[in-house]
Image (cartoon, rainbow, N blue to C red):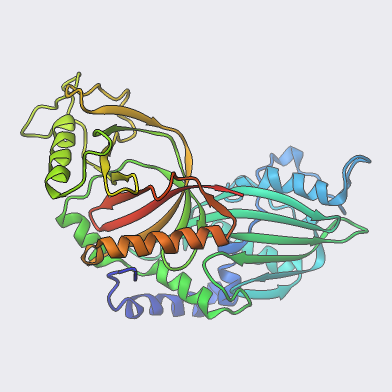
Length: 398
């Protein structure tokens, strides 16, 4: 299965902007340094001015190792990385600390400090957000973090949202407890050594305008996004692991969707439940609910399934359906492995064979990377969008 992007001739649009970013005198740092904010996973921390204390080294208590002291600092500070009221704690690092990520490699806290200060309130970026998923002490001189980093590149009119998942390895001095080496790794690429062309292409690809995909959404009148999530892993080839918030859905009877006619009947049942401008909603409140995405097809793995409409956020309590064959189901928060086939022309490849092949690839991919599929048998969810579809498998991390 090849993911259709619909991003035609975007190099001609994106590359001049990248050249401008590198060449403009106000941003003379190398590309990797100017984009260090993408993959850096520590440093900008919220702290009232009165509480900022200059320190020459990490000072753990008798019960706490130097690595534990650093881990505690990271847990507090990384989730607040992009808050403008935070002041970076440069004193956690040796003066000659080495920084490495897929786009850059340099030595010295001064250079890193200059770049962070430049990019923290940059005219190029906005809306930065870091989610810290894990902090582990590997040994007395090594701390490991896992994170998701997102931000908007506001220099382009379409303001692309950039998203990275990855890890950081902190190596600390056994004597001072200060960080001597900071090494970032991205999940989306195999070659993480700077300057990685995979990293450059990943970055540029996320900046590219998806004109065809957006056109499809407009033509097909895409519904509101009804299933908010946070990204846990973003790999190449359209594979992801997401953490979905809980949601409520109206579901047709299990096992009663098995061919085109039964599918169309189930779609009509859900449309009647939510109603529209021309027909009264068949729910207890008579309330018209907005069209939403995705439409879920919950497949048992035995060639029968049911359909489900996700109640969009902000609608209050879901109204009871008048048709007693429909049921309201509260879905708890869960982690979902995803194979995304989205973009212009994506639906052309939606066949039984392609879906089976995609599920096999997805299952093998996540199991090789430390996740366990918890679906019963061959069960899965097919999530339909206006611009394509996704295959979902519920997973848990081993």
